[in-house]
Image (cartoon, rainbow, N blue to C red; front, top):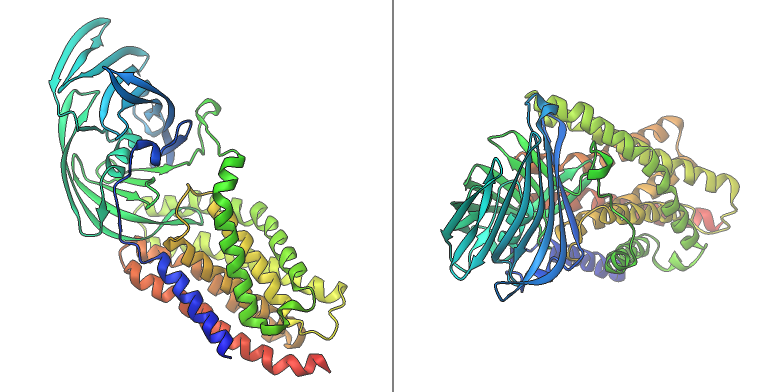
Length: 495
């Protein structure tokens, strides 16, 4: 009992470290958060349609006016005809910054409704000199702008991401600054407030922890900025438009930069995967104690992880379809998100719990368990399923620190899958048909609650800190119940 108590407290301490972060220091330099060769893409959504994308690639090192610089290749395309406005725009070219992300130069080609213009600017000391074209004629430009200043355009999110990355952030901070906007040759005031740090929903079932930063200038916007210095989501409130990092749906093939496998990214993700496996092992130890080494539970854990593949090909596309075609359209029409958020959440719970139930039933029917407690088979299947889901989610997120609020949420999700596996195994072996159905309904509802609860945080109806307190409660209660259940049935199976 003492061993399990220590493990529970260790699990809680591990998780509490992950969501205690409320401030981050400024980036050391530009390359510390955006290495050479890195590509980032944002998709812009308006009226439930993808109308544009920005692709930003850190291309090479160079020199501008004798200063060390970094070239960022940019491609931005917008097609406003999708939402009824006769306007198409493409901006492509190179944006140059110093090692600390300060503005150096621009070389852009701007195409609006097939009319092409150019913009070439370069820093010369404390001034920015250059030209832009109008109907083919060059218009000279000159502007005084501090050498330590940043460039930032509200549509070029990589520039605003750099602007935020190069400063320390803490909840409660007020940001007051000015930025240079190359395309307009204007200096705009920036005023924003760091409201809080918490869990946000990105898209479908993907969530991440981020600073919520509300801008009042240059326009009313909400930025979601992670501790890993990723601008993962933007809400343009006045324009009723949103932008998401790495969403490439509904775009022409030439605009799509789909996530690709690389050994470098796999190496960066391996520590995350290791932590998830460790959490799954801790969950099994809490349930099984000394029996964790018996009955080849690791085989059922692997089987549970493999079964998540079924969810990838059923739950994920269905959830995506429901989120895009029902939830988004209803909320955009002004209906309550609290009601319609259940539409993509509930199928996730149904499909996942049915997959686990079928696998556990198949193990009992076709495998000889021996004298070990078969309820632990359910726990192992659930733990493996939870580990696989956590790995799947983190693999579809931008790189982030191991110790984050997302780790806490995914850790308790693994714990829930473990204890729900025990409950399903018990129902399959002992319960009447009515109790079998009741148990299945309970675990489906709790599973769906994990997908549904973040909407309260998103609507500012629940503080993120309180959310992180509530999230562990149900899995821990079920853990206590399942430990007692296993103890009561242990002697029955041994005899």
